Image (cartoon, rainbow, N blue to C red; front, side, top):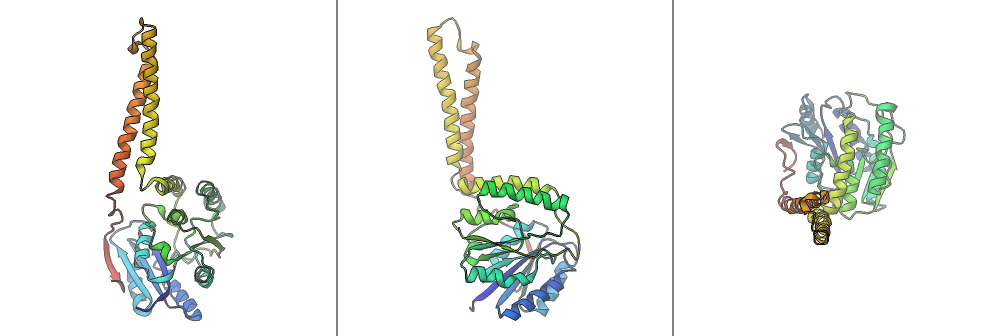
Length: 317
């Protein structure tokens, strides 16, 4: 089978107005640079005519392929299915709302194919969003991300990214983890992560699909991905260690109280308040230990967590 230069993955939800213009723009850029390419549009349960538009575009352009979800699963699910279907040596993701410019494709491709980056993330240095509701929270959010993850990206959540094919075939994106794909890539062993300033265009059609809750959820997801990166395959190392230390603290306190009982036999153990603290600590330690066992069982039987109901596909096996 002939190698494909670029796979362009576009998750979408109710974007019927922007899709024709986006597809035409991508085709012009790829034709101008002579790229062999495929455009995989993932309809995440749209309630408008987005899927009908994708079907029409697949007839108009041989490169356009489509995946339609039975219902709305979220951007992470859409990207994960796109990554599984991608055949290109370089994989580029972009949003469907035309705020990401296809003119960025050649440089994003070059940084992966020529400079050897594993992942390149876009940086919307100049944004056309509301300063109070989007720009300021986004800066704070990214500052926290940099601090916790150690990855020096200014805009980790930018939808415009490019990847070496090995990266997208090595990571699993689920829940709301699309915000932290660079972190997932880092934990998978891909260290050459770069950044490129990209144009952020004003929204031409539709409205934003994201609200304030994404910042709270995003922070919680960052903690989750950090934990999963370190202990996802070995949760007993975390819970077992915590349980052992907690139980040992309670046990040593109990020994101390027993010694006191022999020294001062006028006071029963149950009459000493520290006895109940020791008992509670040992119980909590035991619970941590049992949590570790359960987590080990879950981690070894979670192969089906990325199972989505796909209603229809176009141009894909």
